[in-house]
Image (cartoon, helix red, strand yellow):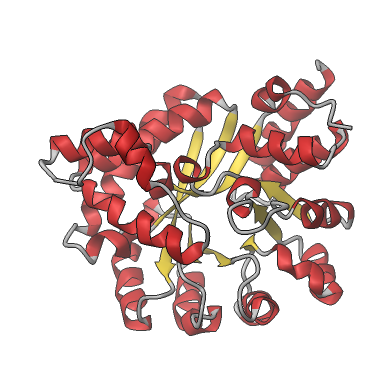
Length: 338
């Protein structure tokens, strides 16, 4: 038996997106366009050839494709085009609020200025207000880089603190636990920034990393993190402290055959503020509504469950209580009319 939820219903559903890597929205056509504009030989000359390079079966093989693709991003206009292209898709999916991850070290390490990256992204965010999409930036540290690199990145980022809402932690988790960056997270919190951390699915020491992030680093959200179901005490902590968890079904499906749908529904049933997001949609075959529909269809979610996922996306976002209530009212009105 499949869900009674339709793709049209989830597409129109007002929602927030809290786990979206802007570099992961680099569609093959835009990659090719930017390569040509910047006279970069990427070894592919058609969209189909670019698509064929988007192949991987685990985190390491994905990152081996993901980071080299960024070489086409060179100018402020490139970062603007990348972000605005995504924000147009967000508007089409009725994403009302989005908190966008970006990886400055992936660009500064190849000679691109921090200002080039953030000014291009921020300009797109400002222009997206005309699309009725409200957006903010989360600066991520690459966990497979050094602590010193993270320290320097934070110092640079704080010069643009009016353009950044929080910090995150992503990239290869193996042998790179959250505590490696405890000082940078403490410094970011002291500067008034929000905190979140990737705790990727089915990693070595998953539960220990989740515990570090929650109990020692005081993160306000967990990205991925569905392995937390293995420790009921930590699940209780999530509920008690209203810590959001950002699940990404389609990207999960590249690593886990069940897209972690069972864990997502378990957490939802226990009152965890779990939300549905698209992660790196250009690479994993779907934007946010595709992710909602995939998990709803495979796990026969009820309308109430799908609406609760959308509600959680707003309640666990980093916006004011007043703004949350406006979006929640909009969500309830949509549900009543459908």
